Image 1 (cartoon, helix red, strand yellow):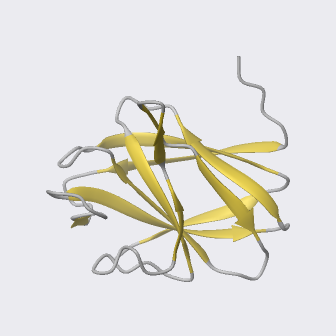
Image 2 (cartoon, rainbow, N blue to C red):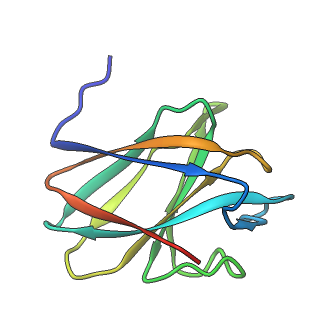
Length: 131
């Protein structure tokens, strides 16, 4: 059983055939992705999680994201643990700073709708950025 502390919010979206693609870090193939700007109302640790039918992979960047240089400004990313995949990622966020969340898929050429769960000490604004 999972107990969540702090304020929980959700973000819903969809990766479609019109979504941008890139090769991802060390990826082979085309990965559909969405870029989301994060603005927090209070400094603190925030966590993003997902429970979807498609396996998502996430990255958090400082200031901006350039798909041609996916390691530039990278703060953290989803990972494997004990042979299991986890979308969950989090970081300490400060007000008046720009953070970028990139949501993509674990496997290439996958599309579909998704929901993110955001847990933290206060509200945050998530704005989809179109490229």
